[in-house]
Amino acid sequence: MPVFAIKFVQIVDAMNYRLGRMTMYLIFVLIGILLWSSISKTFFLPSQWTLETAQFAMVAYYILGGPYSIQLGSNVRMDLVYGRWTDKQKAWVDAFTVFFLLFYLGVLLYGAIDSTTYSLKYNERSPTAWRPLLWPLKVGMCIGILCMLLQVISEFIKDIARIRNVDIPAVHGVNQTRNKEQ
Image 1: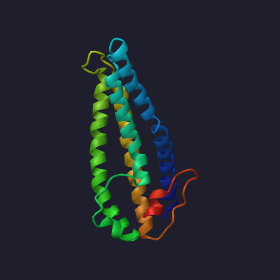
Image 2: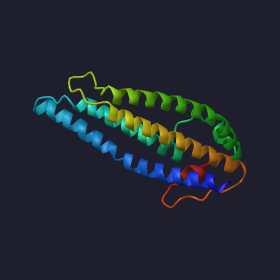
Image 3: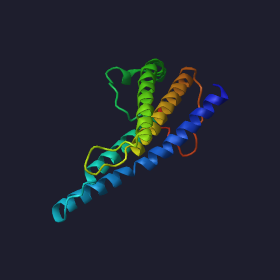
Image 4: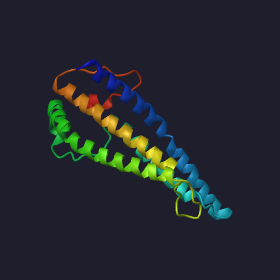
């Protein structure tokens, strides 16, 4: 494998590993928001911001956690015959099917960037009573989709390495569970 490909895999894996580990804690932010929503509805006046903030936190949790999920191989897949295949067979199939995912993520990123540009240009706000700015959420979505796209390319390079029987050294601290399971 070329040195730049190995370096790319190591950098992207390390970045998405750290991002994923930090993103895991957003679930506690979400719990706190929903807990406050329940308390305020019961004992005080209901807060206008809680439901929408919880939705924003959930979007960030989902989008920013996606690359980490791909890295660990914890994404859902139809495993009717895939689980019985050898590592090399899995790598061949993954190396072929990744192009569909790359196309989908490319279109998604294009749309997200277009939507973010619009949101920044016109200072777009949510149509709810609270009316928060939408561009911070859309920027986060662009970052998450870009990180997912980079992680998918990293997994493609790992699949090519598996096909060639080449071992890509892991970066310290990055979990290589997916590679060991396959």
